View (cartoon, rainbow, N blue to C red):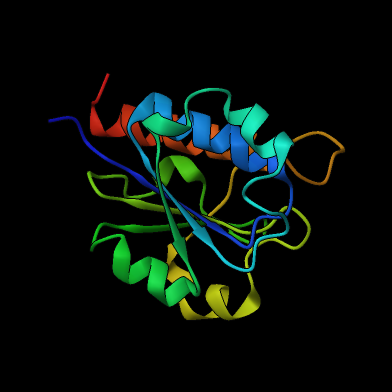
Length: 153
């Protein structure tokens, strides 16, 4: 059986980003965890359109808190992505069952999550003048790096 990664989105705000990440999870067999509150309704047209007709191929779990998402996603390595991190994402401890955590598009991970897990923070570097990557782009980079490191392809 192939390795499984868990993608945890904490309070995502933009429906097409979540839809794109759902499609990514469907393509890779990853599990998508959405931590409320969400900035959209899950029946929004733009969310469904971004995921196209792949929603039946994606395991999506909804959680009322980050703690609930952690409890539901197993005991794999915890890998949090933040612009405040110093360690590059390529050094993250990717393994089967790893939990890849992303914050909202507008504010990133909540401070309390960052403060609770300072040794689990990883950075996807940016060299240009933009201040951030799109959330679905960052998730794609991290998921494929994870599967590459695990040796799934």
